[in-house]
Amino acid sequence: ALYPQWDDDRNLAPIGQEYEPGIDDNLWVFYDPGTHYTGIVFGAVNRLYPNRVNVYRFVQTQRTTLEYDVKLIRDELGGRWLEGFVYDQAARKLDKTGSTVAGALWKLFNAKGYDVRMHRGMLMGKSEYLATVPIMRGYMRRPDGQTDLILNRENGCPLLRWQIMNCAFKENSYELKESNIQEGNDHGSDACRYGLSRRPVWVDRGNNPKLWGDGVAEDMDGDRKNLSDLTPGDAAFQHPPQPPEASSPAERQRRTEAAKRERRLKAARSIW
Image (cartoon, rainbow, N blue to C red):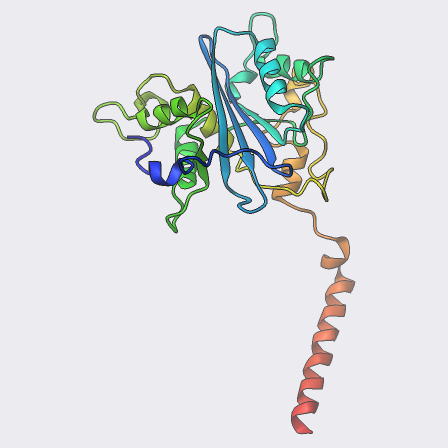
């Protein structure tokens, strides 16, 4: 098994306690487009467990259009903002028309009648097995034995569970690379790998409506060369800028003098 960490008792919602997104949950979509099947995973991250992804719905469409998929996402959101849309990096490959799946999706998300609004925009997920399988295993079972990945027992999630449990290496192959993984019905499990590679974390959007910006600003087909693995908001989050005064020579000098004064006061108190 590719994911021996999976455990129904740990990774499935308790019977009768299906997860429903709360009003301040961050909503995520993980997307794996395919020629025949497409996997769409809907996840929520809440305030109480800010690193846990609660998968509350899974949809696997067959031979549908991108328009159909975007309408499905729009209807599921019901007007709510999406925190992020994570897609397979293969969606950036050019087709015969010179377009990409990612670019077509971006135009649809912003088209009149669709209007899927996002805080962090479209994010490219990692796809390499060597990088993403350990991440997904870590979500299933943390070092303390708890989990950061829970699936509902309904709403299409049984198929996702089946896909995760049936991911396996080919015979006598154990190195984490695509050629060693058995081919099969894995659009849901792949979508999870891509999504979790971005490590969703809860953000209080009530107090931080603009944190990380309002989404991707550029047309994904019109500005392909300038696209990077991280949106500007992601980069700022991973390397938050420090206040200028915190690292300036004047501030360092001020802190040094303050520390000296504190030591002198302590020494004087000990004498008294």
